[in-house]
Image (tube, rainbow, N blue to C red; front, side, top):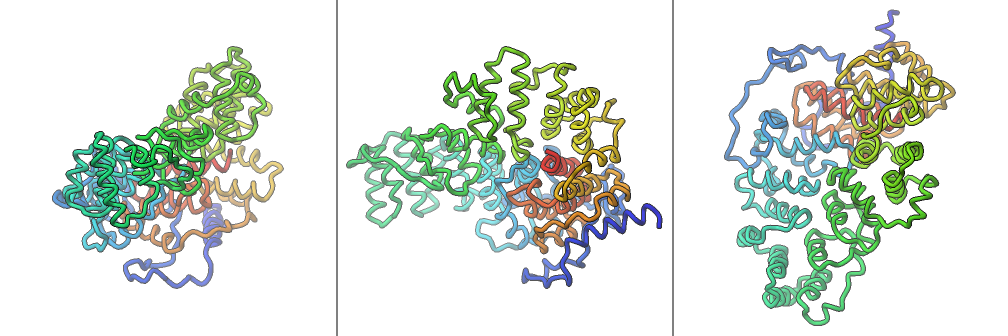
Length: 589
């Protein structure tokens, strides 16, 4: 049997190991959701592909589509990103059932620690694209998109889409999403809020008007309106407690908010306006990135709660790395704590803040490098790919010269830069580690898959002298079953992005167990069908839902590999490689 046939047989066996037998009955209840056949999506290089005249990769026999005229008068179709600005094209939803979009848009994950997912989600929601016809959701897709953007915490994105989506101001769900985004991220324009509120008569809008009256200093009007709300049976003790405190009504000034699990945006806005500290249980429940960012910008009673909220908000994409660094700088430490920072070994927000402060205070180059290495070791892989992992780079490592004396730091530095997709800086440190020999060279060799997946601007490098076989020798040396399983996951990711993986490599990891967790089979088969028929929006929507809030590092590598292959099939190659890199970070960290 030829090597190529062995490779195909082994790959097929690994893929089919995920599937139960027989093929399960379809349970979605809608004929339009039924897959055409229970066939798994293979790695991208196995698809028959050909470039179009414009260079776009198409899957045979799919033909280039004619560009339809955009329905500019449709709020569901208008967006804030055109194709030239990073949008995914006006035919984004062509041939996709409306019911599927209405079901999966609200389920989009928002707390995944994945910059690649966050970027794809944002583009999917903001793209100007003809919406599929029909629909039963009140407010339509415009309201669903605005609500999801509001959860993500991007106030500017919500503003842009709300302005672009004509008629959104007349839809209560869309208008409320815009107001709540403003309440969490910035002070709302109360004149605009008053205009919107004229069209809606629910209790929530009356409470927002009371908030605006307080902001305007109209305390008598706010007190009267709140009393009317009470008389009408409105049950919101925290809201009335805060209103009484702000207006000086009754004994309000003596009251305090002692518990606030999963606070509403309006509640947080009132707390911020009153200058009140947030209770310790504010972050006790599952909260959105927007709420996390609002808590981080507020005034928690416990500094630990604030730095934790800041890290969590940044990890979900709602805050930038500089905000995390500022939170570290503001965390209260005693001088003795900073002097003894080298003893910090626990990967917690407090310890990361402590070592960050110690790096800034260090004057001895050797101690500074040691602390930088320590900071990098205190960041787990889920944090390494996002803003938290960026902090030690922009505040310490970026200004450090790559010198032979820094060989011990080199593997950690290369790994951190690769995790961020900064292959230019990573390769400098990676080369230093390879040239250093000994443990540094072995550590550098184990980073070879990250170098392959993260490299977008190849250039001369020592890394180029190494390859798959040498990496396998190092990765499979004295490994247990779990480690071999991680190696198999790396092979699947490499193959999914189009890197050659020979049959012999698969032979060396034979016997690794199949992942215990199964993906959602309806979504799994829908992904295959959408990618094979070039339905871009559906492919992205289903892929994001398959990854879920755990992100690529918490998803079985074989599932990530199929998602990567699907994204490449619809010409989202860069996005696919970013997801593969993030997944690989979790496997080699």
